[in-house]
Amino acid sequence: MSSRFTSRLLLAGLLCLLFISPSLAQAAKAVTDPTPQQALEILKAGNERFVAGKPLRGHQDAARVQQADASNQADHAFATLLSCSDSRVPVEIIFDTGIMDLFVVRVAGNVVKTDEAGSIEYGLAHVHTPILVVLGHTKCGAVSAVSSQAQGNNLVLERNIPPLLAPIFPAVRTAMHEHPEAKGAALLPFAIEQNVWQSVSDLFMMSPVTRELAAGNKVLVKAAMYDLATGKVNWLPQDKVTALLQAAEKDPKRVVKAMAPLK
Ligand SMILES: [Zn+2]
Image (tube, rainbow, N blue to C red; front, top):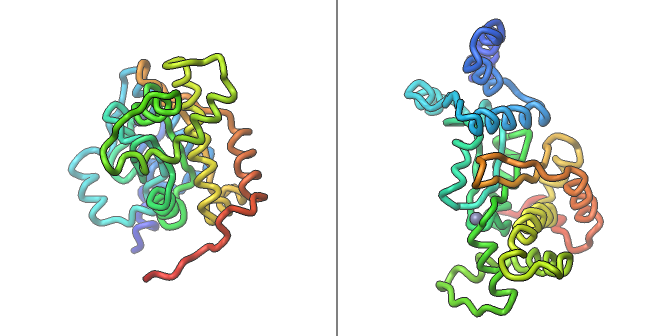
């Protein structure tokens, strides 16, 4: 019996109990094949439980560990997320999820270069998650460092950090251009949001399969901002994601080869 078929049998049983137990409802959603919109609603509901201080903490027990060992994650994980490495943004916790729920890429400043784009392609094209969330967060140290440097402060950073942070510079320059009144630390919130858009744009430019899945409505690409002060995930305007996808599709500099040979 295939694991997906087993999941469907489990789902049928769980659906009967949907209105009895919220934790079972959560489990049922996690084992079915949610649409992009349903996947978004699961994430929103999880963050609301987290903010309310009423997390279910599902999928975190020994049974789930055993299930994960015996499963194909593609039958269960329902979202791919790109977020910052910052310890204050523990992705599974803030969405009240557990083992085998999220395919997570974490990197300082939630930047997108080859490694991150390739990891996201795994999440979308192989784990088949119907949603991708690019998640920035308030008070991001990586964006703060670049913002400070771009405003004339000479920072000396360890050997590998400047190339890591390089993709953030265009975002900071855009924020400075759009908000000339914002000086010093006042620029940071604008730079942080612009950096999320930069990552979405960089991904669309680098990843033909991401463009294809997003344009075909197979994957919903969402941009969001995590507020350290409240624990809330604030969802950014969808029309901007759409505009960035359309811009990338027309840009001659976009990567057009779908596959590269393994070497
Ligand atoms: Zn950060």
